[in-house]
Amino acid sequence: MQVVARQRFVLAGRVGRARLGHSGTAREALDIRTERSRAPRFGGVRGTRFCPGAALLLALTGACGSDAGPREPVLPLQAELLDEEVRDLIELHVGQVRRARGDARAHGKLGLAYEANERWDEAARSYANAAQLAPGEPLWRYHRAIALREAGYTEESLALLEECAGALPKLAAAHQRLGLALLEVGRLAESAVEFKTVRRIAPERPEGHAGLADVWLAEGRHADAAPLLEQAVAIAPSYKSAHYSLGLAYRALGRAADATRELNLGLDADPRYLPDPFSAELASYAVNYVGRMKNGVALMDAGRPAEALVVFQKAFAKRPDSTDVMNNLAAAHLELEHWEEARELLQRIIALEPDGFAAHLNLTTCQLGLGDLNEALAEADIAVGLAAEVGRTHYTRAQVLLRRGELEDAYAAASQALRLDARDPMVVVMLAEICVRLGKHEEARDRFLSAVVQLPTFLPAHMSLVATHLRLGELDEAAAAFEVAERLAPAHPRVIAMKARLQQLGR
Image 1 (cartoon, rainbow, N blue to C red):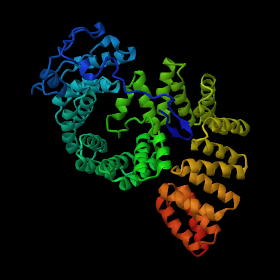
Image 2 (cartoon, rainbow, N blue to C red; image 1 turned 180 degrees about the horizontal axis):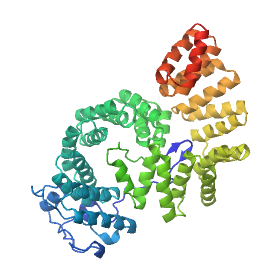
Image 3 (cartoon, rainbow, N blue to C red; image 1 turned 90 degrees about the vertical axis):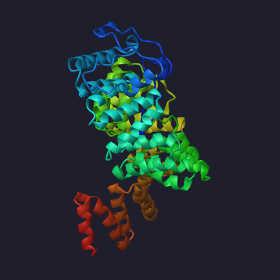
Image 4 (cartoon, one colour; image 1 turned 90 degrees about the horizontal axis):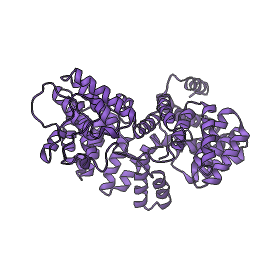
């Protein structure tokens, strides 16, 4: 899985959804056998007997009686297969439950520890305990629904999600999960309602737009889906599943070239879920490799690279020769502008995998940050040579050429990037800026007009549009464009200065 932002390419290889510590599916791991053996470190109660058939389902769904008295902690199945760090974490929380068997929060935290490390069955049962001890806290039921779904109990999970969405009307995450579950079972009208709710609660996030678009795709409404998906990828260019759905929409609309590009951008897409009040704590418990890497990528996507850096450093300490880990760690350093640290990692990756264009592209960014424009251009040329069909390679090369003052070559590189990736608004912005410097003001104006449509809240594009209108003597258009910019950030120094300039011009 690769994620692009600030020319960072995250995860050369995909992190799969492993059932850690299980062989086969969740149901196979919890089949009708009775699990008697437990790692001795958990001591005390040797473990829960798991009953066959309906009794097993009752245990997982938490419908195991109405007694809300103190409960024993849920112990892990096949504890001997756990990573050492996971085992230590579970042991800690099992001990906390044993000291407070009637504390819903203790059982819930144990459930979070299991969920973070993809032990879905144990998580579901822990959340059942927490929910019965604290029936007024719907978040435990919500996380139980998540665990049940991952364990394979989709019908029970859907029913519980419907209950939780009603109890948590302002939690966008609950409505998103319910919308996805309804979509999967073909209840399209109800799914659309949930995604519309997500869009209302969190319009700045891409998940609601993409989810509603997926409903429209399922209904064959491709022309309605495409604008929503374009909005989603404009908000989050690294949102792979939105790119893939957009490719499907374009293909149905006969836009073959655009479809191919978007489908390629959406390869190896993983689900993307909105956060809830337990998300930060949940992420802190992801101590196995897969959980750590997924957590780190999620933090990067959420714009929290400093936290992601800590996660990837821990993974790197365990797997210092993994190029996947190094790629992610370098990406976090790039976001934080730790140029030297990123360069060292990227040079190691290139030594191991010289034909990987992403590392060369990231190294280009490092060299730019360090001010070495010759080395930056050399790396950009290598990246283009390895992946000439990828628009981001030409975009990054254009950045280098622009820094070097080679404007005509920068214009050509940016134009090629736009031909390959017409949906990347930052390419449009850069090409417009190059046009300004080349004196191509009419083309610059047209590019900025396109950019502000794709990036309606991006102040620099709006302000550059105002300035370009002024250069062309288009005072009315400049005043109208400025009104939009001023609404975005009335106290911004650049806005204040432009307002004074327009007033001097009588506008």
